[in-house]
Length: 246
Image (cartoon, rainbow, N blue to C red; front, side, top):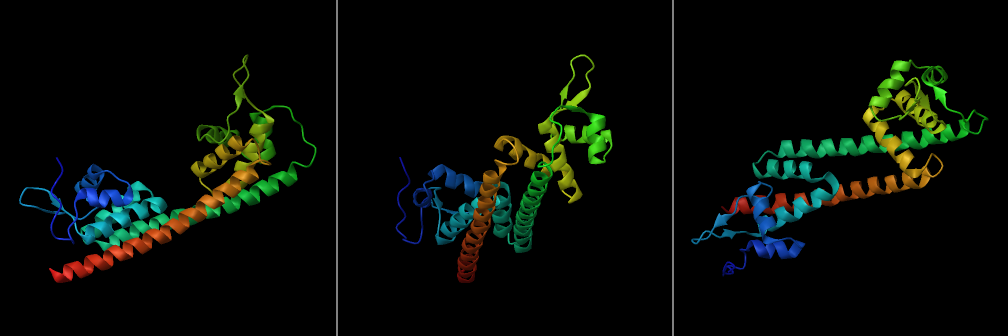
């Protein structure tokens, strides 16, 4: 049996907030329990009583998730609800830094792929090469290539008889792309993610469509951050006004 609907039109039940966003009433209760919604008052019978402040908080949280993800959005809302606006803004700043880093990575990947495509127009051997040959071609030490392998950047096969690493033409392509990105100052984990995209796309030529999709995702993420900021500002405004009436 559900809770009786409050007679005060400014008070809402969990189900009232939930329906607006296609959530369950339990999800709303969980959000309040986890601190992403401010603490609700209770009726004499123990039911949670939500207000317009909670409605705005829920809208802000759900909007923030799209741009910042669940962990960061939870941190933002909990910081706001305990009155630590600076901590909330630092988390938002960190998300924007990550977005900017991803944009710079994408720009570097596009430039590296274009450079690599130009170099591959020159006739090259399509046979597998040992680690010493690839290291010499790139001007790095074999230990560097082994480190890249541990990071998931290259995936050389092994000769059955000797166990020595052998790099296929695709491995060579990946190593050359990784080398270009490392010269640009990118971390190994970033480069490993890029190379996963290259392998999933089937090479550098089909990668163009994947890069366009990646840029669209970054644009959508940036726009979602704007929407989240607007919803958060609305919540802060109504929360401030509500606090002034208390």
